Amino acid sequence: MEKGAFKYFAAAILVFSLLSSCNKTVVNNAVFTDSYIHSVFNTKDTVESKRYPIYSVMHTAYCYTKLTSVRVNGSSGSVINLTDFDQTGFSFYTPIKDSSAYKLTVPAPETYTYNVNYVSGETVVQTDATLAKSLMPARNLNAVRTTTTSADNILVSWKPVTNADAYKIRIQSEDPTSKVLTLIYESDFMVPLDPNATLSLSFAFSNFTPYLNTNIYFEVSSFIFQQNHETFHAVSETTIKRYYGI
Image (cartoon, rainbow, N blue to C red; front, side, top):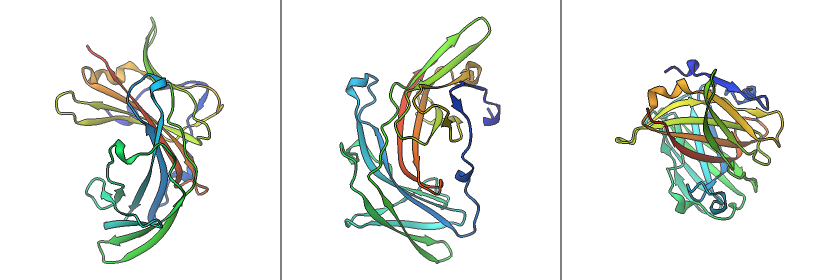
């Protein structure tokens, strides 16, 4: 299914606007680096009283020219070698972490130095810093099938996140046998009209018929942008799983 063919219906409380400054301008050899506070819930349990946020620092670097490696040195003495995300040399991220890397408290502000190495042999050094800014993962995330005589939809809803500038929704299918994930849909950055209202988005159920009898993951990410709108101060994520049988 082509992403462009995905049918969705915007609830009146949500404006679907891509923040224009979030579209990166292609500049040869320019590398974009970012360190931010990442937060998730401590458990996948859907009972809200059992869930609380945990925090870690994430680092990213990407470029339109191939890189060979990216090393990040923290002012506290930490050293992190970023992982080539898809083995193409263009995107590098903090190695995938388990929950033990996350803490109950927001990490203290810190300055990070990126040592970026290009395939050409060129080396670039950049710095970024985290601040004491964080986001709560979205609460009460739900995906409910609603069927009427005229429509068959899945309504995705969640409570607003305090201080969030924008949101994204990603939907993935997981094959129950191979556990391979397939991206079904990913939104642009979405800015709410009313930052205090419950947010929702409705999708035509027909979008999901190729993925019946698989696990469907609905993920909502929240963002605080830095002033340039190209990097983040904080990102939070909440994910729920649903199963739709034939």
